Image 1 (cartoon, rainbow, N blue to C red):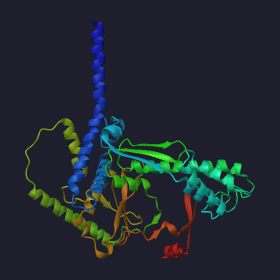
Image 2 (cartoon, helix red, strand yellow):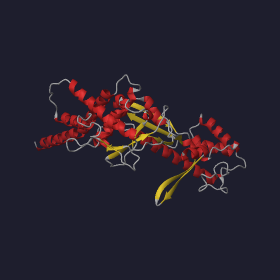
Image 3 (cartoon, helix red, strand yellow):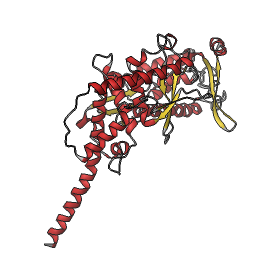
Image 4 (cartoon, rainbow, N blue to C red):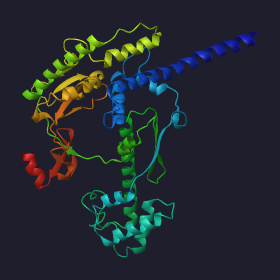
Amino acid sequence: MQNKGLIKLFALLFGLVSIYQLSYTFIGNKFESDAEAYAINNVSESEEDYVSKRQELETRYLDSIGDQTVFGFTNYNEAKKKELNKGLDLKGGINVTLQISVKDILKGLANGSKNPIFNKALANADAASKNSDDTYVELFFQAWDDISGDTKLASPDIFANKSLSDEVNFQMGDEEVKPIIRRKIDESVVSAFEVLRERIDGFGVTQPNIQREGNSGRILVELPGARDIARAQDLLSSTAELEFWETYQPTNQDLQAFFFQANEKLKSMVDTSAETKEEQPAKQESELDSLLSDVSQDSLDVAVGNNPLFEKFQLGQTGSYAVGIAAVQDTAEIGVMIRKKEIRRLLPANLQFVKFLWERPSEGSEVAALFALKSNREGLPRMGGDVVSDARDQFQNGKPVVSMSMNTRGAKEWEK
């Protein structure tokens, strides 16, 4: 009898622990369902690229309420970390294998060398890689050894260049240079790996799996629940580009007038919505449904009040480059407000191509700044990163800074 009682006790404890663990999955799913419903209500299927717009809005929704506590013991961000890991088998999603181009890394390390022997070795490595399991860098070294003759890897027009001058000098033999190149390639792959991880974190996918496949330069990426293949492909394969955008000052009178007009327009839209809304019979809700719907209502419904925009958004001050600030949890709602077609129509002709972008707040920050970027019909910045001829990291007054040199075109444009 005592054994039966002990078994029942363990069964009861096991059941309670299971319910506790499953509660995280239930809470996470509920938040995601609310996010999906919110996105569907705010982005019509008639809009261009509505799928990606909805996914972006879902992500912003979840970001905005991620730290809000429910049941007094958890929030969405914590629930997603502790929920059951469904993976691709149960949840579906996207599975991608990315190949880092070691050839391009070698070219970059050699500063785009035109040395015929170097480029011949690359071509031979390309051919050999089709029928070999060896890594590309080892195939390159084999091809180099076969044809290099008296030419050294430490030649000034190959790896003994300005960029590698701290590690490679003219006196080094090939066997001394090879370990340095291997390490540099590994560092580049690790850097690419970290960039992919950061991009995936911003993709809005929970429990992604990203891992390197040995020293092959391949990276395996699994995105459970992701549906937009085109967006995932663009996110993972696009090249980060340096761009120089000019910003509008918060004191710009046209911009200030726009925000005040937007607030008035939103007020009228809310009033109209309130007048036409039909009363719905009250429904019984579970405690969890009530809590979660309250969170969604408080954080993401357009504020019904005298100042729908300014209740959550504060205009920027003189001396700042930000045109406004808001609580991080309100950025998604404000973004929806100022992107509405009815609101964008209020922009004067000289501001019709303005881009509104939130800063990426630092970890733990509760406030985010909004910037207004000057753009054109093509959505292009004033200058691209191609005007930078050289860049290096330095320390200034004990703080890390980036020192850049620009070509003639960039320097002239920068002076304007």
